Image (cartoon, rainbow, N blue to C red; front, side, top):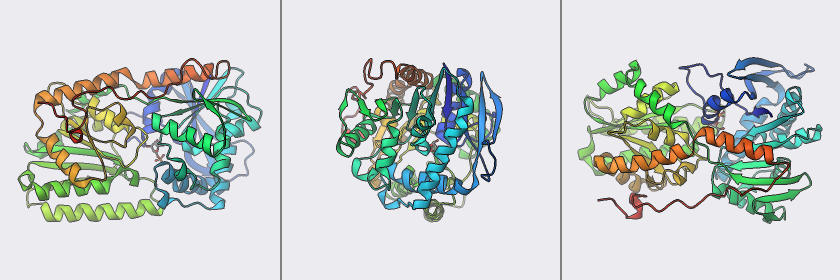
Length: 486
Ligand code: F6P
């Protein structure tokens, strides 16, 4: 099989370059090994006069990377417009932030159609196409319109919200009907999958049996494939990275004080305001913790041309400066706030340096930072993960300290508990999480999806739909559950 992987953002895999976005960083090592062709945006635009889409093609591991210049007239409406101002807020249950114009929708459809035409040059009789993420909901149906008959798969890296929320997106019906051109649709969690199926049943009146649905395109299988990381590789990287100059400088600057770390794209879905407020609350209610712990918050700027992101950046900068102004001392800064990206190598070392990882999104498809933080820990002295129960990762990492990111007091208390957790409890929680990471790696995710995609036309509904299992009971699940380890 000749696999063609498609995503808006791609990664060229230059060692030690800052990584942009979970999807591109996660896919890079597996795509590199698989021999697939990975097609995405070059980040540049071009006017529409050229006959053939312009693609810069370079070798990538055993395969190739093709970066396309997208049409200048439609790029803004597609990326900042419909994809990130209508779909993204809806997918993250922020109906209040949905902004959608008819022009933006048309640009989104134009770019999906443009990508479909561009993909024809990579098509072979035994090709299969695997499309990633919400930028290309309609790409499958555009490919079918061009006569492509090969297997088409789609994986959504974000959550899929409740029916009433997605119905707030203009043209939702047309788009979701178009999604049924895919033979296989994958989601991160059972809840996402159930929300999608509920829409198909209730809004489109379709029958769903064993995760399979029939539409005018034929059969589509809908299933759960939780994305993972390569925990072994990340652990090695982290152990090596402790001697990286940035990491050593950080360690020296702490003077024995503890460190909590947060690493996020600067996005309203990440719950950054609530997180900073929780630290503020913790230092206010437990003043003895001042000078004993600081927060390193890396917030990489993202989608800055969109008003909601610009507003958030300003609000966060103001909040951090206010908290630092109130709690800081001449020789102590409570929050170290950085608006830049770091390479994965440096991040691995920073995670290992921090006694607490705070990953508290309001909604998140998976959140690979949570998994990377766990994998980066020193097995003899692991840190504690404080994790939002609304991140997809919480389904697997259920021995993290799970928090409600809207409950500022609860988060403040939980962070303090994390800071004082005894070694034996830290080790037990960490080992349980590592087992989960090892059982569900990025390599396994890739292979499972590709296998299912290969079978999708011959045996669309078998063997077993991969609906999420309920998490296994474990006595250390959450401090909020009231069940504690003694
Ligand atoms: O699924 C989320 C995602 O597509 C991930 O790749 C990443 O976290 C982010 O969105 C990237 O966004 P952008 O490409 O707009 O920076």
